[in-house]
Length: 285
Length: 314
Image (cartoon, each protein chain N blue to C red):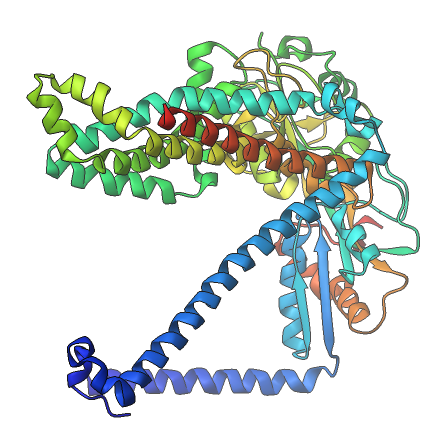
């Protein structure tokens, strides 16, 4: 018992010592203070959370609260004054199909998000062209046979209207083409996770998802003969990608500006952002 | 504070000792009673306030729809394409009602059978085994049921039916039936157990068989309790969202077959609410659907309460 107490005590002492040294080191670093609220895209949420953790360690007086819902909630929350930063998968200061521009907002590029077309593992097709994808999603092509696969109905899985992934996929991969609404083999899912599960468990299914979510249980197909990899995005041959934005009301100032600067800094872009499998914005220039 | 030991029987002492300790005790009880009464009153008023706020806030936003599109369009049109300003919710309303009906059709006979088994037939060791299991099933989060539906039930349905998707009313009803089953079974079980033993004894004394006792005596006597169980199951089925979203297909069209990918009020709201702008007709239409959901479950509860009372009076 006595030994146990001793160990606990020394462990606690060690923890205190470490914490104190960290706090001491950090307080010297930054003099910024304030509260930053980030709202919006779930795709960008892991990036925001990681950046917030690192930024708060350097600036202990800054509190960052981040939450994710749909992309459009980001600029909306900024417009209503609920959030300082609205994370959005498209440039919300300009019109996109289905959504009007949010006037007076500034789009700050923070990351590059690649998207991939995925199919169930039983599908034999490895490559799809823009025209073939447009045909599949508009309901003109309904059998895998028509695009060089086995004789089986195509099951189209898509995200709900207004999803940032859908907005970008429709604009880039389908070149603005329609997505069919009412068919027998057509299903909508609510999130990237549901999309992946649905495609992985439904034979003959096709869907689309952020490249970072792609893993062994689904197959990413080539687009116009180009494989969906970060290298191909960077060298310009793979076209289905978009910038992720932090929307702010006017030009950012104070702690908000410092936070965005940190996310855009070389240290974060080349370090944690890459580790999270996003692509640094500087790579696209 | 000194507590006298003899004042536990003040009535025996009569009027001689009313003063002093007994009087103080009386005052204390009076205060405690008054306090408790106000506390309970406050609790129920707080609940009513919250309920009223929910109705008012959802209703207020929902009413904004009135100026935007005609109610006939909303209730009678089957065309829900918000991006083209078409807000017809008829398909969702019909799908919600048929999904609830189908769920009850599957779950009520099974769960009442289970209740009869646990309450009347099973030996004690089996009861002790079944009841905690049913309680556990109630506590499982609905998203788990949804995930199991997506990964286990849908492939099974695909194999059985030859459909290539499998999503639709049948899949959703099966998942929901599993979810409401323990609720209905456990509450019916309590209702059946509460039927006095003398009813059974009398029926057996008249020469009834066990089946006759259960069907003709016990179940009618427990009728109101079972009805309450069905109501609770039904409200859970109508309002359930997360599990339904994962297996129903989320396509805004009328479910003409059991395997048509469809959408109900709850699933459509949760799929779209995070992607619409605050001050848009679309947002008001979704709030109107939520308000409608509130009204539908309220109405169904009233109808079934009314039916229950009628049967009791007869």
